[in-house]
Length: 514
Image (cartoon, rainbow, N blue to C red; front, side, top):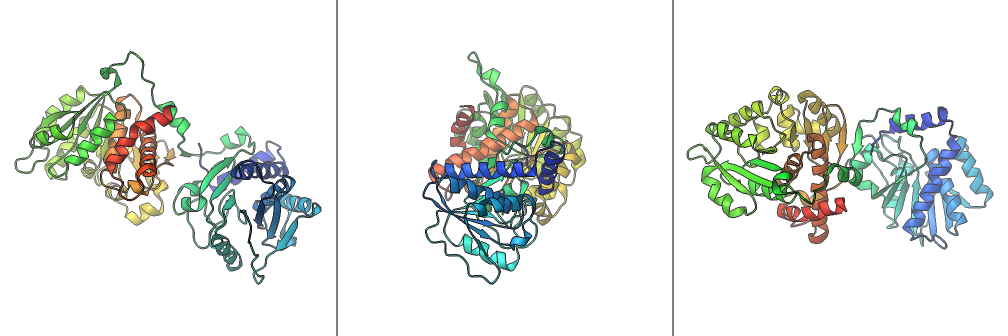
């Protein structure tokens, strides 16, 4: 599903009106009617007797609010409309709809900067129609006072199209901003609604279909996408009734060093619970006995190590390449440490890698400031850095990355010609062709050691099942986050560990497949 900027949404609206000959008044009617029906759903299909306060600004967002008011009034709700502008400022389609509710005798109260705030006692729902998706900057003091009052009321708030005060291009909040329990966004979701802090202001996001012409959307070059469960379902292959373990993918995981066998274990267990047929973990030979105890369903491969360091040595290069030849996909990096010889081993492996692979964790450290080595890798390679690892890879300060995660991930994917999964809230998957996928699943409970290793195992399993790198990263991030959401639901945010995410993976896959 596409995510649009405010400018793109304006262009789509304009194209629908000018080229598809859809009157703006008709689009406003569909928007208001659709949101009114959503409000009815919130109240389990019955709005009669409900008390609803609708706050409208001077623009088309307010116009949508007037249409909502008309429908709710016709369905038996008691509706109060509060106007945060001079009536003389209302123009065009919004004015036409204001006149309609005036003719119905609805109560309309103007609120100016010096006016007392309305008493909202007994109100069941507040509708925010103050600002639209084109808002940028800070809210003026008078309206900021109203927004703060609404937020502090304790009454559920539904935002029309977007919470007023939110920057829909970045997710930024510069001042006062509505904190909605529901956001009814029109036609297409907006980029800023899925990036923090904006995501935290939106509550439940519902997309309202207003009949936007397909050609009006298709004519806009939209490169940002929101991953949906339906898309993920299409990516996961069905298992044939006659399948055996060899048909379901063979995954090799090169991982582990002294003190970090847990990373190898979590990646392996996550891969197994993501449906791969066979998993082999290649680790320093002195750690093999530990992994034999930790892992029951996975096989192990003892590899040459640096004496007294218990980390992988360059001498393991040949054996690893031979083992890769027998695998369908490879995970490289969880817990391998940063010994200079191990890093050189990884640089040599990447140069000759011929199977789909994911490069993660300490494995990424070997390529800090060496994008040319990644670009020259012949394999379908997925890079999965968190912000700190991405800073080392790209040479950009973390604060720059966090200020423009979308732009930085996109630029680096194009630079190295590989899929880049930038972990965070939200996780982004950038393709070398300029497309970016925003992952909507996951929660703060997943901020725990080993969570990234679980993600590596999930993506590795999907690669071994024959899914292309971009799709494996998009699908893997969604399923990993969904498993985290399931774990949070049963355990809670505090105290969740990576193993809880692993245990929830089969249920996450079942939910998607069913």
